[in-house]
Amino acid sequence: SKDKMVTSILLGMELASMFPAGETPAKTEGYEGFFHLLGFSGNVETTTMDYIIRDHSSEKFQARKKAMEDAVTVINSRYGQGTAELDMADQYYNMLDRIKPQMHIVDTALAAMRDLGIEPKVIPVRGGTDGSQLSYRGLPTPNLFTGGHNAHGKHEFISVSSMEKAVDLILKIVELYGGK
Image (cartoon, rainbow, N blue to C red; front, side, top):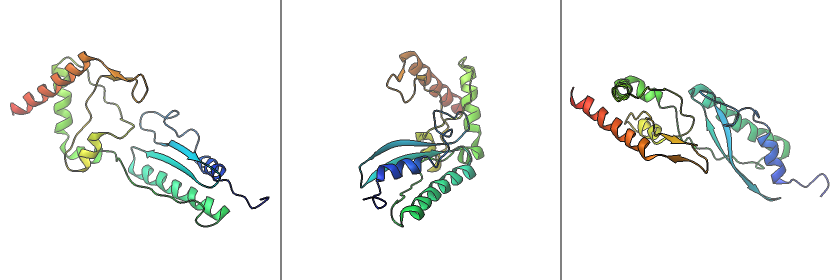
């Protein structure tokens, strides 16, 4: 097997090393994009890696997808065509493109928050949301607060009072639109 054996797990590690180590969810914030290795499993013969690619900029998002394609091309050029395969599907996009033409939705939500004594904090959401999917399907849906804590962790929670405040916000938005 000397100079012939190819261990797929090692190729997976090699492929993962082609992406910047500082561009992961744990090392980025705000509007910075990332490559997120969700799953890595394999054996000598076959390895599967599951990634999420996120970026707020459409151009940078496309560049990240190209980087993924290029990494697979490099592996195949080093070890033979067909050694690595890529199955990539778009999942979430930055919804701002779909919401901008109807910013009154955001403005109304912000006004409703202020009416309820909630000081709005507009921050980027770095993961996929239902609002993103709905916005791209033609129903502009900006993200509102949830009041949740420790998102995506095993200690994630939301208090009843936060859920009640979210209901108050939704009712206030309805009231503001009803008064127009």
